[in-house]
Length: 151
Image (cartoon, rainbow, N blue to C red; front, top):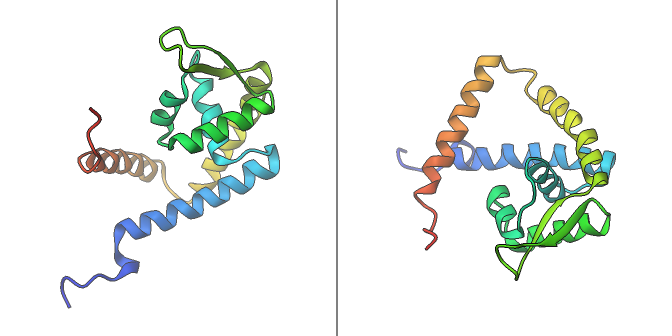
């Protein structure tokens, strides 16, 4: 019957299932190899590309909510992987950056993350990976129209 929803054929559902499965593979690897949760790794990866960011900016960059960012930042700070400094632009917040130990950990995890990505996509051609990246970017742009406008 046309117009009837069949969950296994519903693309948002399939995308969610694929995302969850990939995330579980990655989470298991990061946890067993480095004692990191996905949220913690995301903060480390983003901070590795910056000179320091507020928790609010990290939330925007990682698409994680305030609570997840706060918990991950606290865990990383407690492990000595992240350092805090006063934020000259906003005295109510701090700028987070990687400590030397955090940078060293990033340099250990990063090649393994790239190797895991290569392994996950080993059954895809380079053109298929390029097309998937392009389609995901377009999908992310399309979802922006559904998000509340920040004001």
